[in-house]
Length: 354
Image (cartoon, rainbow, N blue to C red; front, side, top):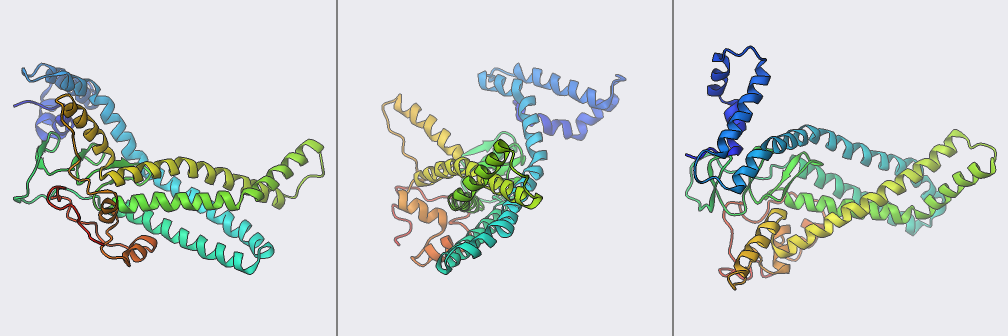
């Protein structure tokens, strides 16, 4: 049986390999002997049998690099989550301590009501969807035996996997309808939390755009005030004035930067959702389309139900009122299907006739 390079780490953790290390007469430290055995196993996998090809060679050579990246990403996941929380809380502190008093003193009552209502609605949507995206399991293969159809066998888990399921090296398990592993969530984005992830990206982008636009004039005033004070050697600001101006500049620069970067990511995922595919499936479908094009055929994504139906399935919209209760308000409803079986386009062309 062929020894896949992806199973090297599992072999390293096995008791059989540990016993071999213990029986060795080498006086090198245990961790160094493990590295030596790991490297030797990689070399042996290159010439294990006649099925070895360029993909196996590439995987074997770069397996240490992949393992290192997975380990670092797994370790830094908690740090990235803390960074998201800290940066978001810093913007909230500036908004409540600096911007809100200015709004209450300078804006008319209708504009005050607008800023307070929209700002808090946006904040609730961001906090809810980030928490759900980070804490909800993306969906894993069931451990018990079942008769559900599968399309391939995972070379890492050595288990049959259904359509749209892929192995995550960081989580070290197969994920249902895997999109990608997000270090900012310290979690995979899959079937059961994909909607939460996209909604978080969308509302965070809207919140950053809102702060950037509404705080533009305050940013220009604060920047000009600091620049004028520096060039004319005017009497120094008080500590409170300097902190207020620097806080406004910090908030505007951070929210504007995140709005551009996260906005581009949100638009890209919106395009993928409209096409009925994930980030991984984008590459798979492109390669499959090129392969069939060489044979004079056209590839069609079997999970593309049309733009509107793709969004209805993704958002879980089953009737018109759900556009408000499930999209514009926090909702913990489950996604369409169980992630193990999927409707194919020729069978059902209109999944949700709303």
